[in-house]
Length: 307
Image 1 (cartoon, helix red, strand yellow):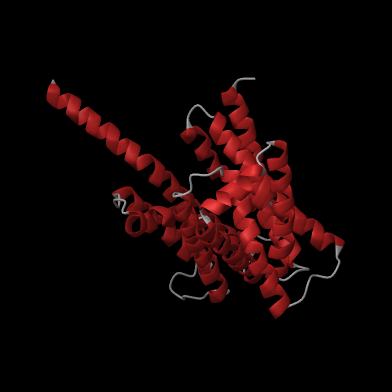
Image 2 (cartoon, helix red, strand yellow; image 1 turned 90 degrees about the vertical axis):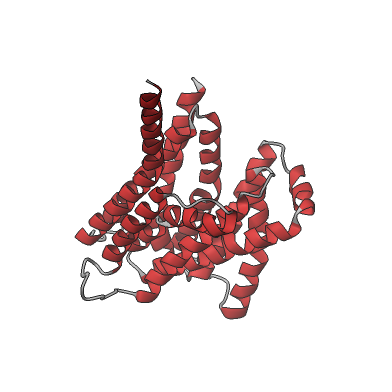
């Protein structure tokens, strides 16, 4: 099989798995607190990533990468998994899955905006256009379409969902400075973040009691939100002839997720969610396409002048 075809298979596999995790979050949160779910999922992910690195014969890299930049992994571990997933799961605990899912997808809009002050990158018109469209979609979802009433089902939940996009964007901005193996770096982040998760859990709550359904959902989240799916996506990007052809597949995930939420959780999908999610996806598309259209327009203009 050609590498490009393999890339699509790995990419589709990752997207399909990511599309199910919002449903798994809600199923697990019916029995676990957000912090308990982080605890179960992170332990699962640590074991899964450890097995993957053993198969890849890269376990020796863990010590060397950490010793080179311990403070770097302290930063990433605090952001992800500790703060990001705690905030995200609390948002899912307070909001319908359809709302939390849609709001969380705006991290891709926020990322280039934060890159301006933090990475000294230029602000593109396409980023501003995408942000305006996306956050209008966010407002529609958050207010359930009641644009003049400013009525939020859970204002705290909305703020937490949007805060999760900030934390996730900061995590990826910090990771632009990472020169190590990405799977090793992810495992190190989880290993460093885990003591903070455990300490907070023991200090504020208690270890989760045995519940087969809850632990199954938590393990599923650890495998297919945090661990295995990340590796599948990395392999897809590595094997792809063009990264863009794989990256655009991400647009499938929220649409498929809404389908699983309606089917398994039996949530009635509100019209405002469809409208808001459509605007967010349009914004993501504009963010990707407008720079290419501007370059094409510039080339046409240049070639016209040369004639």
